[in-house]
Length: 498
Image (cartoon, rainbow, N blue to C red; front, top):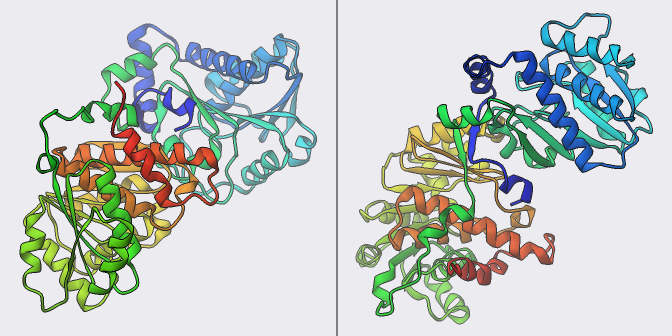
């Protein structure tokens, strides 16, 4: 997790929640809304100056809402501190309204000038403040805003975005084709949901919160729409083992998967379960896969099974937790093994091909964890992949409502939802974009379940462990990183020093 992200508060809010509570909390504190805008612009200027202390000039690109007011306050602060400031205003012939108009006039009174926002006027600019759009943006961009966003990104400048990078939906992290690529985003009052999931990972840069006079009251008085989590939040679950413990104390897992030619997925998931602390792991797979799996990891127990094998029910029932899906494939054998897992009456983790079978045979359970990536989520919901990514929060809610249990919607800013609590885990890195990474995650979650964690804690802790291990592994470079590279760091992380 980026250092700046780790330093953000855990409470996350939708833009609508912040807009609804801002005037109420301002009144409670005896603060004028204008004072909040002034403070926002000043804190954004301080963040700019701290990040780029040697900057001599900047261009401020303004829209027409309160975001423009924040931008004008920043522009005035920069002007008063000796910087050369150019303000590029969208549709300057139309007067601004309310507090934004006051901020604009104060900038003009300080000696500032306003130009019409045109893409060509950003050529050669070294620093840009993006004040085009705020938290109220949703839907499609107007063409003139799209052109300015493209110009900002093509300017090869350092960019600070106010509240959100323009073009990003602050409620769900969706961005269309055009979104400002910021180096630093200063968000106000509360951290917005969309800053930590979906497209935000590619366009926000470092994120800083300027809580203003009311931010602490928002965090303490208003129920958050979601919570940010990290590995540090779950270390207390990873206590040292008792000196007299044995393998039976740490959980038994039955792992089902590995169809023809796919021993690797089930092997990765099972080894991850062992590396996460499971006492015993038994794999149920195709007979042909058993020698390949055992040659690489003799600590794993193996059971070959075909469709006619009735003893497999007993073998799966041996597990205190069942993991089904890695390398499961499709066809009669895969469906048979999926049904075996369903009938085991054990807490269940379903991943990969098991989710594809579930999409064709929908059912609901309260005692499972589902771990879809966006493509699998789309199949489970009967929608397109783009629909899932357009609103990841809606997708994970729809999945949980339809299938029950705990749903882990993987991707940048993984979402974890149990029907009541929404968690956002901005963990991991693009090095995980390789085959087998999801299998490792499912093994970790199953292991934590078998060691006694609740469904929600196992899912959340597993996601954070997986992401933290990936960040350590990526210190050697993200490109070329393998899923198996995470194993030594998983072992390290489940044994915290304090």
